[in-house]
Every structure is written in C-alpha cells, then in structure tokens.
Image (cartoon, rainbow, N blue to C red; front, top):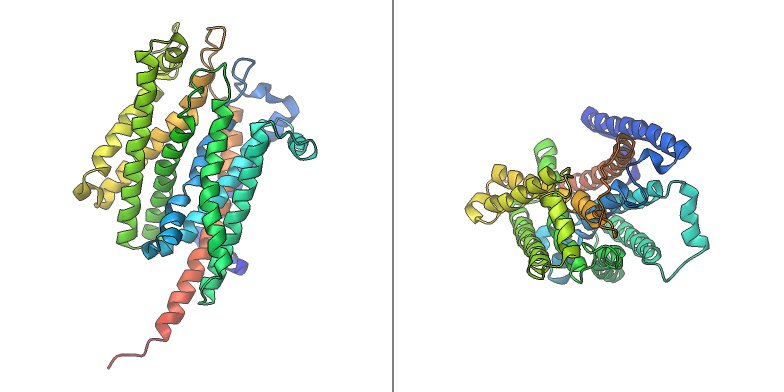
Length: 395
C-alpha cells in the first residue's frame, strides 16, 4: 500500500513540498539551537519548561482523542464511524511522533534521550511517559495499518486486531494520565498541584483532539470529495460538545477551589494569567481570548439546529481548538511556573527560534499525516470503485 503515497495530484505534491520546506527552515533554527544551547529559547532557571513541553502536552491529548472513535466502533459496534476510524488512528500516529520530537528538541542535545533507555529511572514519571507514548504509537501503527490492509482485501480483521484496539483504548487514557502526573507531581507549583489535573487533561483531549480531526475531515471532504457520512459527523460533533462542557466545568472547579479557599499560592497563577501580577500582563489578552472563544463556541455547538449546519459547526470547532490550545498549549505551563516559589515573576514567552523549531515539528507531523491519509483514502476509493464495478447494471 505504500506505493499509493507516491501517486497524487499536483495539489498533493505541492502540500508535501511545502511541508518539507517548512521542515528545512525549522531545521536551520534547530541547528542554531544545537550550537548555541537552550539559551536561544525563552526558558530560564525559574521557567525550566517552555513551548516545547507545552506542545507535547497538547499533542498527547490529540493522540489520545482517537479513543473517541475506537471506543464506540469496537466496544459498541457503532459502524457509522467506519470511515473515520483509520483516519483517527493515523492522526494519533502523527501526534505521538510530534510528541516524541518535542521531547528530543527540548533535551537540548538529541543524544541525551538515550539516557532514558540505557539508564532507566522507574521512579521518574518522564520515564513512564516515554514508555506509554511509544507503546501507544506501536498499537496504533499495528491496528491502523492491519485494519487498512484487511479492508483493502475485503476481509474481516482477525480477533487479535480487535483485542489490540481495545488495549489501545485503555492506553489512550494512560498516556494523558501519565502526562498529567508530570505536572501534578510538582509540589512547588500550586497551579499544577491538583488532583483533578488528569481529569482536566482528558476532558480537554476529548474535545480538542476530535475537533481537530473533524475539521481536517471536513476540509478533506471539500478538497477530495471524501464523505465520512452526515451521521458520523453529527455524532462526533455531539461528543466534542459534551467533552467541552466538561472541560469548562473542571476549570470552574479550579477557580472555586482557589478563590473560595483564598489560598494565595493557588490564586496567584490564575491572577497572573487573567489579571496580571506586579505589572506583568503579557498573558492577559491571550487568556481572555481563550475564555471568550471557549464559552462562545458552545453557542455554535450546543443547539442542534445550529451545530448541524456546516459553516456554524466549522466556526464552533475553530473557536474550540484555538481556546483549548491557548489554555493548554500556552497558559497551563506559563501559569504553573509564574510566579515562582519565591513569589516573584519571571516572564516567559517563546522566542523566534523556539517557534521555528516547533514549526519544524508540526510540519513533520503534517507530512506524516498527509501521507498516511493519502494511503487510507486511496485504498478506500479503490475498494469502493471495485465494489461498484461488480454491481450489475440495471435495465
């Protein structure tokens, strides 16, 4: 099936070339970072994690979102997701690869990643995060590729494929739970030190990840004519809506805990993000934008009559993705490290080299996803064309 990635329209090749050029551009900045060190980033002694780790956090949620398709399809035999299931698993593959790439660029020197393999530290949560991410990548590779192979040959996948798919559902919860433990296990950072952190991560993952998938599928339908079915689109939109409502509810719980208890350590990060501290207001416009978009997207997603209109659905999904990315891909990490345990503010914002290296990683993920989806759609078109040719003509 790999040969199908080598055939495509000029638009397909133009996209691949564009993504490859972005990778090369970002690779130049990565070489600059390798030669000068992490001083090229905005990180410091007080803010030791930066844009790279925040994107890892967000993308782990995108990877885990495949469970929103796998669980109904394999557990409840919801066959309307049949056309989406492979696309969701391939999106998870691309997302995990980007997660691992962000770990590599954050280490400063790539060879340091071998320390986790040659000198394992089971008492470190990061060690287990590496394990669960790689296993989840392997599970989606096997289930997605094998399922596509059997679909191509018009055969029912063997039972072991379903067993691995069920395991991947459990594993999807584990990858984001372990990632949440990276944050929740830091006693000196009050914004992270909450028992609901893993639940917040999962809720945000199950709305933002499927929202990205659905946006890409709707774009694919517009560009290629691929149609996952109206019922599948509407059902996935409902799942996204419920997950976003839970995500907002969990954040409100954090606000209540911080301000009703009147604990300064818990209030300070939230005040920094939404009001500013000691004149530092860099994050305030971003967080209020996220708040407005997060609540506003529900106006497009909750009413059924509005949500089932494609323009309104796309608008709501875009608002949701932007809001969740600002909250989880920017505000969560910056708020957790500000102020520091000495109650002083060290401003952090990603530098140009950080953003360009991140662009390299995103372009790499986009290239992988484009190739995998091209293969999946080509196989489906081939099978549907063969089935259509076998239908006898009507008189």
